Structures are given as C-alpha cells and as structure tokens.
Image 1 (cartoon, rainbow over the protein chains, first blue to last red):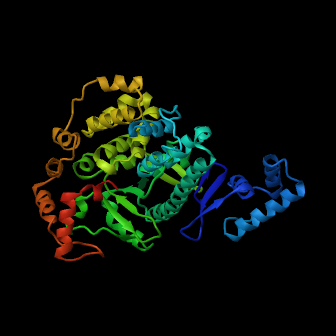
Image 2 (cartoon, rainbow over the protein chains, first blue to last red; image 1 turned 135 degrees about the vertical axis):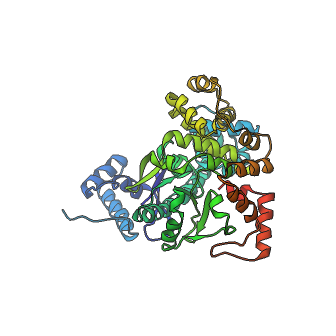
Image 3 (spheres, helix red, strand yellow; image 1 turned 45 degrees about the vertical axis):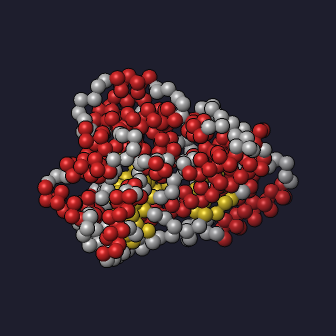
Length: 81
Length: 361
C-alpha cells in the first residue's frame, strides 16, 4: 500500500478503505523493515538496534503487539517457506 | 517579517538551502497560513524542525501533525491512483501521471516532501471514450459536466465518486492553446517509470515534467498559482541543468519557451536565488520560434481572457472546430450531470468570471 515516512512515524493507506493509518514506534519500525519479505528474527534485531534500552522480553512483547495490530488491519501478507 | 521572506524560506527548503527568515511563536500563524495555502506544509515542518530552539516543542509538534495530515491525504490519493492506472493498463491505454504525485516520487528528496491535492493523469485524446468507460466501471463519474461539443476542446475531464479523490483525466497537457501546442502522443512516447507500493506507474520524461511545471505555474493565476508548482520548477531546473539547452529547444518547438523561461525566473526570484549558470547561458540564445498571441495572453501582469480565447481559436485546426467551440459555450451539457438553461448560463458566467476554476486543477 502507498506510504509516507514523516519524522519517526509511517503513514499508510488502508488496503480495504479510503482511510490512512499512522504507525508509531515499534509498528513504524516494523513497517519500514516489512517493505520486503522479512522474518520475525530480523524484525527483533531491528527493534533491538532501535530500542537498546528496552528489556528483550519487553521488546518481544511490543513487536508481537505491533505485528498483531498490522495483521488485524490487513497490512501483513504471510509466507510459509 | 515579509510574505516574500516566508515564501523564499519555504522554497529554499525544497533544495535544502538555508532559510532567509526564521519562524517565531509570534509569526507562526503567518507561516502556517502561507504554507497551507501554497501546499508547502512539508517544508513548513522542515523549517520548524530547523528552528526548533526558538519555536518551541509545541509548534514543532503542530507542524508535524499538519505534515501527517497531508501525508494521509497523499497515500489515500495514491491508493485511488493505483486503481485508475490499473484499469487503464488493463484496457491497454497508455497513461502518464502528472504534477505532484509524479514529482513527489521522481524529483523531490522524499515523496513526503511534496504536497498535492488531487490526481492528474494524461492519456491520448483518442483513448478518452474508452478511458471514461473503463473508469466508469470502477465507479469514477464525471463531476463537472461540459457542453456537449466542448469536451474535446477542454484539456481534462474532472472525475470523482471514488472516496475523496478528484481525478483530472487529461488528454492534453494544459488548457486551451497551450495544450494544443503540445502533441500528447509525443509526451506519451517518452516516459519515466516509478513505483508506488510495488506497482509500476508512468510519468512524463524529466524535461517534459519541467516544461509542464513551468507552463502550469504561468497559466495559473492568483491563488491558483501554488508555490508547490514553483518548487517543482526549482528542483527540476537543478536536475536538468546539464540539459538546459535541449529542454529549451523542446519548449521552443512547442512555442512555449518564453513561458518556461518566465517560470524559471519567477521560481528563482521567489526563492531569492540566482539562476544556475547553465540555465543563464542557455537562455542567452534568442528564441526564434514563438507564438506572440500566446505570449500576449499568458505573460501579462494580469489575466487576459480575451487574448486566451483568441489564441485558442487560432490554434484550433479548422474553422468548423472554431465555430463548434464558440457555440459550444451555449450548447447543451453532456454527461450524467447534464442540466438545463440555468446551468448553461452558470457555466458561461463561471468561465467568464473565474475561468481558472476549471483550468488550474
């Protein structure tokens, strides 16, 4: 979907409706990485580099929340291989 | 703090040059008003960040919120654009995205740096009926009805009906005589490609993007002339500086060189910048082929509608077209919004009083 990066936020068009969504924090970082196919492990590395001050468990939980949100909005495409 | 200094600072931000003025909390309202009116909100945000110390966190955050709102509109319009070019492509209709959406991706440092408010797509005049049909299947409807015989004399159809997006489906590059001077097939023969959301989209070639930005800036008057168009001129001047002579030659082939040169001077004067050497040298060669009627119509201090109509009538290819065009002003409207005598008179009055409404889209 079309997107724009403004400061530390990502603005994206919803695929199923004439609306825009603003992603912040972990969701924005994940989105930038997700522009190509990527793995959860790669995303955790990106988040670790972006937020070294966070505990690993908290980062994992934050990433899970962000991915769940993106998935619920229809922004994620899954690949099994 | 003068309006000129604010305009210069916003324009210079496009090419990453230092400010000529600094925003303060006391002058912020003026900055915000000019940036909003001139479609320069991304540049306002950039200037606010550069001067965050004197502006304060709250106003920088406000500029960011404005920029995010602009970005939201941009992605919604691009989503609609992908639908349009997808439908045209399926029908085998060649297209080129014009103005803001194209320059944001191809010419500005980042797509988020160019604000735009609608979708402009150019197609061949011979494809107009097929394009209208295929877009109609996707819910696009003509929103500004035209007199029955006027449609092919206009440079674009305005369409809507799909979300908030307004689509200007161009079959010529510019209004009236300006559009007739530029053969659309020549523009579609040389296109640049870019990608939106992993999809290939086409735009005019770079030199044609500059000519179009310049002609559009000159043909738009008053509040219809946006600083964002001059920003495109400024940025494209830089990227085509090695080809200045050939760009001028192409514009001269179309008898539009004086308009392009005026736009280039205007953009640099507004930005309080000198012309690049290559452009000064290229402009030093005299213009041999020109259209004095077009220059009289479009290069004066104020709008000269009578001269524009004369230039248009002369540029039409036959006397029968001239008669059809002249009487078309009073003809019945076509399209789904067709109405009666009152709306015809309104159309005529709107064209005489504020013709840019339909031409500066």
